[in-house]
Image (cartoon, rainbow, N blue to C red):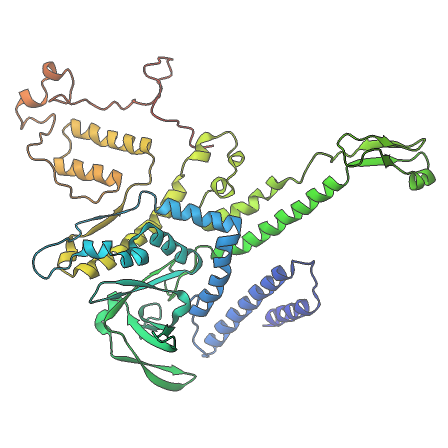
Length: 511
């Protein structure tokens, strides 16, 4: 406890007496807040050991998300690295578009025509269009949460902005499980008048628990019952969820602080460059007095290459810094922290091919760590779309719906993976359905594609030899005119033979 009190005194002394250069006060304030936060945690733990108040860490609150949203939304528009980070993440994640299979269409009976609901312009704007999906990723990027509500009768979706979400109902035993969201907004009537509205919406997972009203207690006082709109269902998606936290955290949150540091360093470099450009020549006088009094006159100051007249005994030389600017590449390591926080490549974040050195592949390829990070977010989008589509279709009709993305691998990588499967297939080591499922997985397509009837397994004695392995008929080992894939196709054998040299793609993907 003695060390703790000493640290507290130090923090208080720093907060009163510490001064910092202009523009750096925010860094000092941030540091002090972190120290106070650590002291607060220590207080909580000490009280808990003494039998005091319960230790809770529920993560960011709604108020926290709204506060950060204001900052991150502005930076997503106006801060180059934060804006570029969002553009990269959004384009990586939605590359090729999300795909649906098994969507119920027009049919007899009372089944919902889900395809018609998807094509509805209102649902396109709110959820299914390319622009709506980019906005969805934006909400996760700067808000940390995205919420929609669906009318159970019309199957129409609408977005609920973070600013309108004012409360949540959680599981009695688990504060990180959200049953329902409270929405407060201003409704405008046809006559121009407005009225304040408050409604609760249960999420699809816990819709069976929906009640008619919810009563909220504030500061120990029980308020009036608030209406639950049971005709509508909420769908939510949280970015960077943490076990035990009711909400996650915006994608750009970890990058925000370092964006400010890098910006300040960059602007300092601009000031230095201006200073270097303002002083080009150095004049040296023969004596101290002469150096102070000698005047230098330019025949044509506004003209490039003008003539200078120097006093007797004086000397004028060009500054060593003339023609040079600040070394902005020295900031690269700080910008790399922003890239790491956003799970994108530093080369792509700076849009500077020079950062890749001499590696063409490093500048052009989507590296494995980035692909894995983007695939993790893709999986979360798949889960959300499945929830929405199956709720639209109903329990039975929704069983056959599949949602997927095509693989992020480049074409050459996909080709080589398929080659490996074909080699196994042509040696008779795979069943037709297994081979089909394996190839579908390479392309990112859900398994289960129907195998054409009458397909013959190569190199298998269960089938007539004349139809499978008759080398005289097709000149190859695959049978029925098939061509065995070459494991060396596309790679040089080092002999200088132009026929075997690699021609499919460049392989300098690592710097």
